Image (cartoon, rainbow, N blue to C red; front, side, top):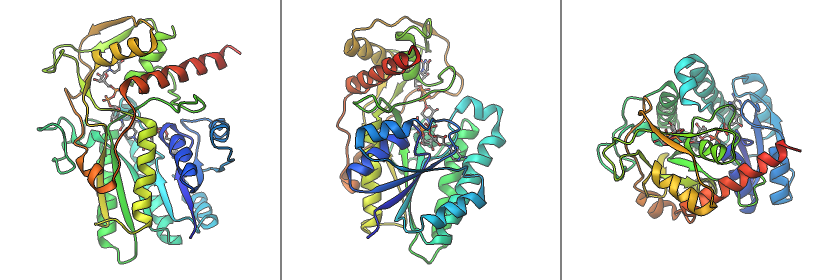
Length: 345
Ligand code: NAD
Ligand code: WQD
């Protein structure tokens, strides 16, 4: 049986870590990415970790013709893990059409190519953002979806809907697992791959590590008047390596016909909620570096608290996280120091 897997967005943050785990599990990933938010050097990092030179195609998923050619070249693949998407929430508010074209137009092109060449197994990157502020915590997969706070969030809701409706209409062997990630952070323990935020980071952890290394003067904590343990917002931070391994488990499930429905959804989180202040203190403890931070007003669009009910993933996939918040933050810090040393060469 073929072990080839097409990984769209495979030079990105989560994609690159997943490629490493796929190789460790005996799969042969091939990456397609337009490098709009990643760098080709990521392939060298993957090679240093795994010893494997991964086949790469610089292709834009909006380009149906180029995509079709690529899929015909790799029609022996047994599945697609579809990461490629734009993900900056703020940018999506200013450029909604860019996000719909890329994330929705691109997804439709991927589905069409898969059908054309007969690749049946699809793992889709969804997000906890589809739940908005859940009425009940921890949030289960059956919780109602809330109106999206941003065009980005909407692309994940619509993306799931398109996949669900398409699968329901099909008589072939097509099947999909949508994975709703909570807050992925950290980097590979080797620091050969990690997150590459362009410009000023929107997300907490890159802002924390950039402040700690002196690239930013001060971390702003967005609000301390939430109804939480210390007043700051609560999230479920998950190590990107644990998250990457879940993709291998999900793919195995589809390849081995262990899925119970043609369209399945799983939460991927630790089940643990941590506040912004807890993250700051855990960072200081695990790295020994003091952070300069200040509490400011809430950020528009932020939810107060969200964390995953992980029992469905645990029971059905047999997957759960292994790495602690301290390990997540220590690996993110090691990666930040590596980036900094490369810059000063
Ligand atoms: P990332 O930006 O690091 O990786 C995405 C990759 O897709 C990049 O390498 C980018 O160049 C590529 N890409 C974007 N548009 C493309 C296009 N038109 N054609 C080809 N390649 C394209 O982001 P990530 O954090 O690794 O996220 C991966 C997926 O997970 C995305 O779908 C994202 O929406 C989803 N997700 C991320 C988070 C998070 O916090 N990082 C949380 C939930 C869901
Ligand atoms: C975490 C917490 C901030 C920066 C986003 C997307 C979501 C998903 C994951 C893709 C919040 C606080 C942050 C800072 C701060 N992505 N914060 N100072 O907002 O939970 O989710 O990434 O699907 O869709 O919205 O993550 O890392 O931006 O923020 O105080 O400088 O840190 O207010 O409470 P978020 P985040």
